[in-house]
Length: 184
Image (cartoon, rainbow, N blue to C red):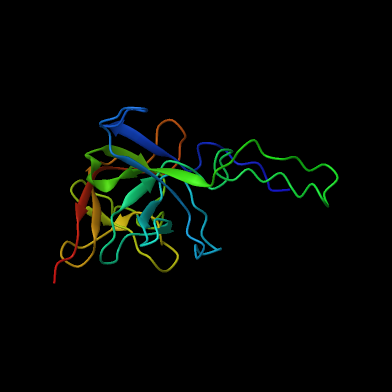
């Protein structure tokens, strides 16, 4: 059995520009791609991109990718609610309708967000006005890191320096969503 998870360890807080069930806010829903790396957990606040088949993969720093920010975790009860195999597990239970679909906010939506999915080794790197990207390879894939305008696909710009989310005491950065692709 997996260890219990604290709800506030991985968060995406929409500070401005998004309201739940608002038809004018730009959000998206999709499933994780079958090739999602097994070493990377899909966590709230992570940056993802849509594939040509409509599924999602971590990171956005590649051509023809629209950055989006996960509002769901892979283990949320409406995404993946695995209760065991009733044919072989004595105390297994059948989940009440997990769909595998994850909710996201799209980078072109005009939001101010706070995410815990950052490079925790980049002390002092998240300064106001810094451009943000998310690599598609390596240990930081799917996390917000400082990017270079004109070299990286930009998915945000730091709006405030807070260091920690005051609600859950986790390291976080606050940023405006932005989509600036790299042009040849």
